[in-house]
Amino acid sequence: MSAAPPDNDVLWARGIVKSHQGTPALRGVSLGVREGEVLAVTGPRGSGKSTLLGCLSALLPVDEGEVWFNSSPVHTLGRAGRERLRRDRFGFVGSEPHLVPELTARENVALPLLLAGAGGKAAYTAADEWLERLDIGELAKVRPERLVQGQRQRIAVARALAPLPPVVFADDPTAPLHRETAEQVLRILTSAARSHQLTLVLATHDPELVRYADRTVALVDGRLTGPAAPVPRGPAAPGMTGATAVPAAGR
Image 1: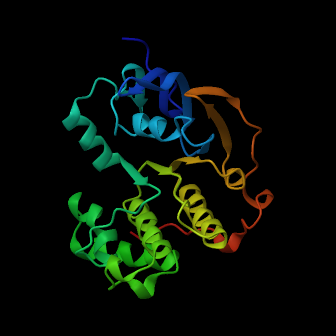
Image 2: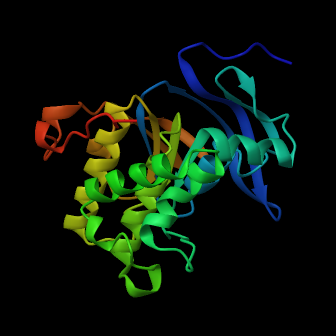
């Protein structure tokens, strides 16, 4: 086994290869993600962005190569180990919300906290806080079937953030949203990550959204084509003002 990655890399991949039914999706990708960083992975549809996030988040086993999380090997874990890692350490937001239809918005957001052993009061308090921060507090008692897609997606973002996982993966999370709503949700997502020192790995094909990241890398045909230009934080990014910063949770 090779040496572990640098201590300041919360995620680290070396030479990862992944195919889907014989079709190459990743072709020897190596990447480090620093603790507390907001990293955007860009590229056209079909470039391997979702597969890369799947491998980094332990959703998909790699065919070849190594993936590390906090200096612990992920690529050697079996299915049960990968499931525990995702449940206990990672948050995930996809382009579809995948909410539990029988549960209200509040119950959906509280669910991962309850599964992790949090008490009911703490779980529901956190759920209420995050729904308010995403401007959907009034929908707490509403079930997903009565909501429009943009509202459901905000609930999915709140659900990913409520447990304050060390790493949040966001795979094209604003795809179903109108531009104004997409910008607002991404501002909240990135500012929440920074205020809580979470690492955020964001995959997007929208070049307008990468300005919210600290750094970008580009994927084309399953290969990294080199880092994009650094993107400044905070005031240099349009719309990022002190008013949008998310305060630390009172828990």
